[in-house]
Image 1 (tube, rainbow, N blue to C red):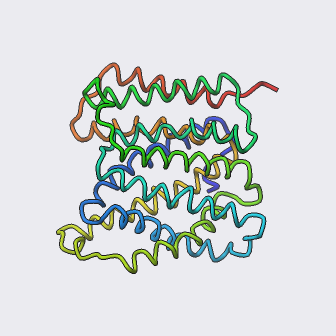
Image 2: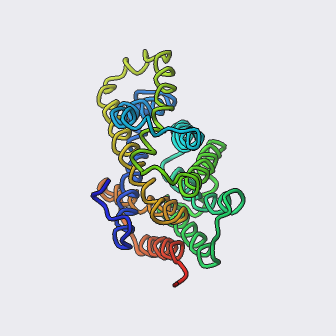
Image 3: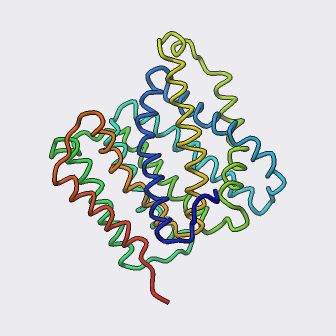
Length: 298
């Protein structure tokens, strides 16, 4: 992805916003896919279509798989993509997109904790403050958008599935940042899907599509899943993994704080209103992301 200048600060922020826009749209695409397909089928289709899109690059780069990076590739593939994909689609059968977006904002918190415990990463107090502000902003934004002050009363056990998914993301982000040095974003992501793609294909081979075929818009909804796979997974992961390698694990994972901002923008297109408090919470999110990315001056 040479289109982006990953070393430039302004470009890093633009890339972060671009990723937030893509992943902020993923919740809608998942919901549309769930109209015809089961949660597991949506996740498996997403993984398999991504695998097919990556196939030419994966075959080309297979020679770069070594005993030193094979574990990292398996971890990035399964922990970073497959398991969260199944957890998110399952969770969205019982919780709304707002709750999913809020819980997804826990990713930077787990990225920091896992990095400190297992990857010998370091963080300044100001970075931790940024994580806290971003989390407060994301929670406040979605709580205000939900139209109720008792937002947490809607939490059910399916929300824990997303919490587990954010832990997986925290592991994945640290693995990409600290353990993978010899592969760029495209090589890393394409080869990771060479491992997970066959798994998804086998699942789909033995899956029952009778209900999906009985729905009126199963082809259209399959198209939404394909968009989710190619844009929301393939393209986004290449950019995301490259961004992590050029910035920090915390900055990359802070994209989850910005995702609810674009969820509100989608709401505007759907006739929803935006108030002054929306802008307050959005400002808090961006201040948090800025503090997360703050570095000591050399």
